[in-house]
Structures are given as C-alpha cells and as structure tokens.
Length: 321
Image (cartoon, rainbow, N blue to C red; front, side, top):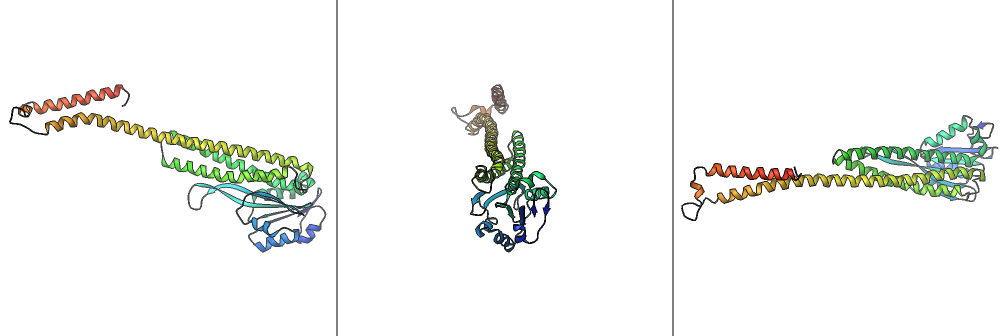
C-alpha cells in the first residue's frame, strides 16, 4: 500500500507502488522464495538479506547504500513438539527501510506487522504523517511489547515452581525448573542482539532514520535494556529456586538418614544381646548358666525392651524423633 497523511491506496504493481507519491509499504509474508525475491529485485534488496529471513540468525541492523536492513524476532511461549513443556518459539521478521518506502518480509503472518498495517489502513494519522521510519518503529515496538508478555508468563511459572518446592521435593518441579532456565537462556539470545540492533537505529546511524524518530527508537532501546535486566533477575530467581530445591532434597535425605540412624542405634544393643545368648554354650563352669534358668528368656526380653525404651526416650528428648 501507499499512504499519505490524507489517504491510503492499494497497488498490485510493485513498480507503480514504489514510484507513487507518499510512503510505500510492501508487506510480504510467504514461504515462496521466488515471490520474496521479486519484491527484493524491485527495491534493490540484497539476496543474502532475503535468505536471512529463512535462517535462524541473530537480530541485527545492516546498512546498505539505498536502504537499511533490520532483522528482529518475535518470541512466544507454546507447547513443544516433543514435550508437553512450553518452549520459546521465534520467527524472523525483516524490515527494509528506504527513504520513502518500507518492506517487511516474513515467512508467515506476524501479529505485530498485521496490527500496525491495520492501524494505518484504519486512519491512524500519526503513523501516516511521520513516514516509513516511524512505521518501522511501530512494528519493532509491538514485537518488543510481546517480550514483556512472555516474561510475565515466565514469572508466573517461577512463582508456581517456588510454591511447589515448599510443598516438598518433586521430580516434576525440578523438570519444570530446568525448562524455565532453558527458556530464559533462549530468550536472552533474542533480547541481547535485538538491543544492539535497535541501538544502531536509536543513535541515528542510518540516513533513513530521521532526527524526529530517533527518540522513539531510544524508547524501544530503553525497553530492551529493561528486558535484559528482567531476564537476568529471573535467571537469578530460577537459580535460587534450584538451590532451594536442592536444599529441600538434602534436608529430606538428612531426615531419612536420621531416622535410619535411630533405628540402627536401637537395634545395635539388641543384636549384641541376641548374639551373646545365641552362642548356646552350656554344661560347664565357664559357660552360660542363664540357659538353664527358668526365667532367662523373659528376663532377656524385658531387658531388651528396657534398653529400647531408654534409647527412644533419649532420642525424643534430643529432638531426633
């Protein structure tokens, strides 16, 4: 489409759209490389830049003689293909910013691009008035806003994990914690390079970014700095939750070992008594006269019970039981 402050026109011919008065925005979302290459040929976009849309590479900003290429990524949480855990899925979005035109390339529909497109069609005056660099800012800003929503979901998950840890060691909790740590690591690989890519625009290095638009990119840059800090904070929280889990497991193990120690301590003297009387030596002056005593067995049993009672009372007083 081609838009001015007063109107929006649709074109099917790319050459006519590029030559038309106003700001030209071409929105291409397709897996057909030939279609995207046709758009690239009209606007002088390098083939390698088009290939970047299909490759999983870091967000970046590259300057060319007639345009600036900005590659960013959307990030969402959704169920994994091989697990039931939520994983971070990213999609490449390429913005090619010219002096009076903007080309957005993506493999499939991107909500942030579609939303800004619809706003311009519906008559948003500010986007029409400021030109292609401001429109590109609106797209990047919508994508970055989605990062905050993702971190909100991660924060909720961490809080649920912490509550689960307090309820006692659970292997499912540890698995969820490891999944969150992987998600945060993946998200970090998106936020850091995106911050550097936007910083190039915020400094006004490309000629296509006007002085009046730089402050908007600086606002996006500030958001990305905040996101980077939040990511590190949540990674620390996840690391702390893992430490709490490990301490809970160690504490549980210690409680089990304490009880086993109490049982072993009680059984030890009983085993000694049983072992002595189990020798069954009799019939001599130096052998065991208790074997012929009528009350020998009850006496031994009462003695063993008394020893057990004394040990139990001692352990209870010491707080081991």
